[in-house]
Length: 324
Length: 239
Image 1 (cartoon, rainbow over the protein chains, first blue to last red):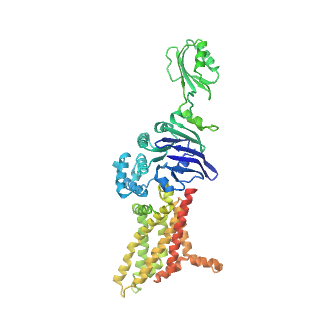
Image 2: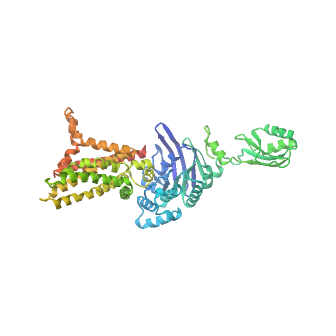
Image 3: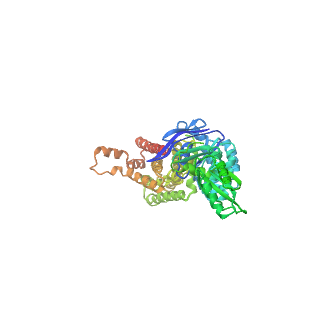
């Protein structure tokens, strides 16, 4: 259980985090999503106790990071953004060093070490120097270090940053495995990653929480559709123009485009109608307008905004944000 | 203070895994060997390491800042400080671990010089006095401890190792020349400068005098700089 309450942090004149609050239930995997400079890393650093908030407080499994810092930090495994490690140390040595820092008993160290070497697929490089490893392996060493003391909460700051596609896939798979029995907070600016890894998204922009919702419902109200795809039969070129006009006259319609990506099948043409924000369900109106104009429809469906569209809508300046 | 010991051991091993550690070691042994071979091990000279100990302030001057320059600065530069700050460790444990690591390296660096008294005993007649040698080595340890504490503090101030080196080098120089203030200096300031002047204290030790006030001075001053380092790290957490 992680609770962040009204966190504020300024660096000189820059008010980087302005009243961020959220709660992570045990076992929840949440993403902290936002553009670069949104305040993700600062928020994460306050949660893991690297830096102290100017105002507000953080508790990890009930331990306050300001009043009982050691107890709070023992509950957390943390992978910083750039995965800082000591290049001159060997993987096994580094992990044993971390185990000592976290106060693991001598008898438990060996077991903890073999557990993380196994889980993070590091067995074959255990005796290699960290400085000689690829970035993907270094990332795994960082993850293994974060998991050594078997913390109930894992916090990962941009875990796939700077990795190649294969390494990204492997790291995501590993993170997914680790998430199975832990509370996890992952920061990212990569949408597909969030969609794959997390069941909850907290969108941060300008140091403020813009949205906090289950991933599949991000930025969308139930039944919220902002575009419609339809196939209509148009027999003559002149009819095409008439069709566009009749659809364009409907209230709330912002734009109508012919789908250039689909090949035209006979006289059936696919169109996409984009509705203005906050519009009601337009399917009935579209069907009525089509039949009044004498156009036959064979498909009409509404589409919810994609995660990306929802995200962009949330972070754009002037967005009122809120939760959904 | 749990966690200080693993940090100290890691620091010690880091010196021996990097060329810098070996170069520092070689530099010190070369300088001290030079003093021993050309200034002490000469026919007709008294069998004493007095000159070696008297010069110890200078011999350690380029070496101690090199030992401490990367202690904390490198962690700040590489970002590994994030791992330390988020582990269940106090700032005091981190600083003490770093400082003790540097002290252990200093011991490893001074250990080979124990060959000088052995050589002196086997070559000279009459035999050299043991007392002044014990006082001399106590001086080396106390002086080294102070230099390292000052260097540790300098290293917490910046992520730039070179800058940390220069800060500690010039601070040590200031302590060495504190007693050389011009006669026009007001008496009150002169008194303060004289009290922090390390050169006179080192000369006393090299003559074989173990003055408790000198011992207290070195221990207190070292503890003061270790304390300042802890404060400096703690300030970083809250900044």
